Amino acid sequence: MIPAGSLLVAEGLRKTFGSTTALDDASFSVHPGEVVAVMGPSGSGKSTLLHCLAGIVRPDAGSVTYAGREITGLSDTERSALRRSDFGFVFQFGQLVPELSCVENVALPLRLGGVKRKEAERTAREWLERLEVGDTARKRPGDISGGQGQRVAVARALVASPKVVFADEPTGALDTLNGERVMSLLTDTARRQNTAVVLVTHETRVAAYSDREIIVRDGRTRDPERVA
Ligand SMILES: Nc1ncnc2c1ncn2[C@@H]1O[C@H](COP(=O)(O)OP(=O)(O)OP(=O)(O)O)[C@@H](O)[C@H]1O
Image 1 (spheres, rainbow, N blue to C red):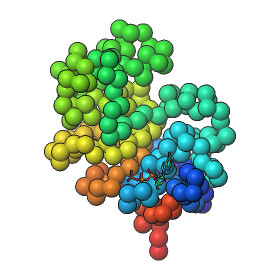
Image 2 (image 1 turned 60 degrees about the horizontal axis):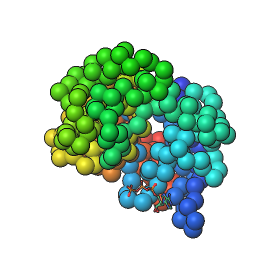
Image 3 (image 1 turned 180 degrees about the vertical axis):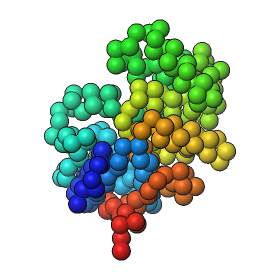
């Protein structure tokens, strides 16, 4: 049964890569503004689930419904337009464009949405300040620390007020202190602007920032709160 008021819902997802079954009847749902952690052992299917939910990977079977609209049937162009307008992304590594300054990186989602350069960069600067990395504005990603880079990436993921942020091991490359700061900045800001967060992690410390956890094991999902 689909929980009432869900923003993003997946049912019966199945995905194979050659002879490997990555997802095998996986389900998922998230409400607006809710932070859900997707946990489970390495290779259990967490990233594949995230990619299906975000419309990056098309499942072999099952459905993904976003804001009442089935997205599994959309064309590649329609799915990329949806990702640009409604979703934000934070990954573990290499997500910032190395040739652009940090302020240009954060301004990018706004520029792609048609906002003029000056306006986009002004908003991007505010976001860098909010994420406590205002001093990186003119620097390139290669000239800042990993912790600063993740804060810039979080600013970029949130700048266009997305409805959902997908974060795949966002603190995987950071030390504990930086990881905790990135997580609290991400989840506090998302909750404040009613952005849902789908957070893939294998660390309980990181999952503690979520409102709810689901477990993926051998491509199947389990919601511990819904098991009797
Ligand atoms: N593009 C791909 N091509 C082939 N096999 C893949 C591909 N993507 C995932 N797999 C396989 O699917 C299974 C699930 O992978 P997935 O990356 O979703 O797991 P995960 O839980 O995110 O793992 P980790 O925690 O190690 O990142 C694994 O056996 C993986 O090797």
